[in-house]
Length: 128
Image: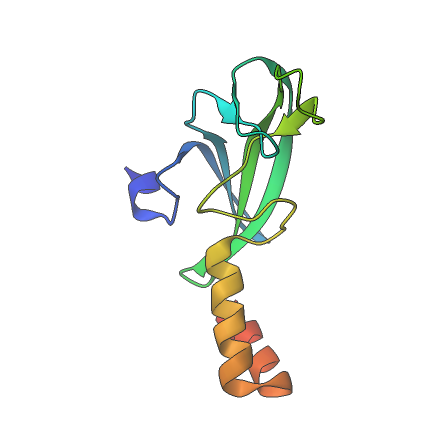
């Protein structure tokens, strides 16, 4: 019930919420059953490994929020494809290799364009 009130993207499954002095960490995993190779587009369901990816998100009730997503790496079985192993993409959540969610990036970009350098940094710091 608490997870329903939090800003958890619908394509992720919340596994745990950790509240610490430095904010709220949401442990999550993808609901997708398979991945798609970013090079050739072929679906893949053979899992190579898993790793944790940490993304900064928008604050919630003045708490810093981090998503720690358990991401899978898949084998690409297409012989014509140059990529053999790839990590699943978090479409609609974050770009590949990003350390911020798309929502946080968009908010910081809007603040930067509206206020500029130091004023934007002060407002972003105050907002968390």
